[in-house]
Length: 225
Image (cartoon, rainbow, N blue to C red):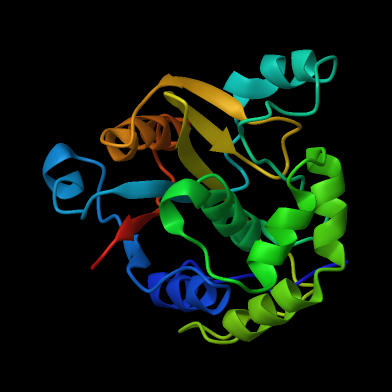
């Protein structure tokens, strides 16, 4: 099963979140660079940082963690993590991860997403991913949004060479949430105030794995009102 991929376009992603019940004061905005002066212009608070990177970039750092994770519980209770079973759904999953781990701040309105999160709250990440396959309201909103980008939307069966992951703050730790990984990856301490800078540090690590590669995009879920 495959979806048409979501474009890494702040306008498209923001509309998508608003349709799913995220209040208008929150938007997805471009992070134009990871240096302190460029991070300083991003409005705060930042609730999530989303990195789009080429799938050729391997995340060696987490391979051992993934191995050890297989013997542990599915995911820490405080972090909402969902496995990806649908091709090209990583953009939507990164956005769901961004919202689901910030419900205390976001005040999500009633709608498809709130219902989905309520229903999947206590489930393991694998079951959450399976439920997404049949979450028609979210699927329809994704499909609508996937057609709204500036570039022509590729077909469902076309191979996509990029992958979205999200970084969120939870209980003093920075978590990387990736639907392809069995568990969230803890990248050490952070806070609501320093999430953007701490996530930028991890994004730089990804970029350093292939200095010749330029196809990276970073966006943030932030308060714009």
